[in-house]
Image (cartoon, rainbow, N blue to C red; front, side):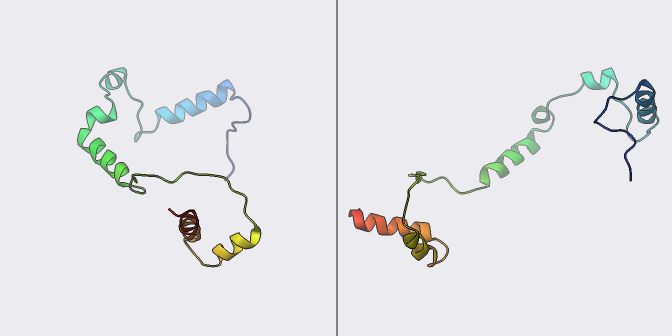
Length: 106
């Protein structure tokens, strides 16, 4: 379906009038009145229970916080060392970390 109006060029006055006429003629989406807009409230104020449940759900997502989070570092290693650990499968970074801890005596 071809689009009638393009965002690549400004609308002519006739096109703008046609769009406004189509908006006004839509019975399912009437334009809000100034009175209705004045009665508007923020989402958290209008529906506090729903806002609280959304906050709880968002807080529940993701990994749980850890006491001592790992730090991101950039480290250059020989390709054969990386290939060796990657060949051991998922979790190879944790195994490499464990081996480094043993080598350091930690």
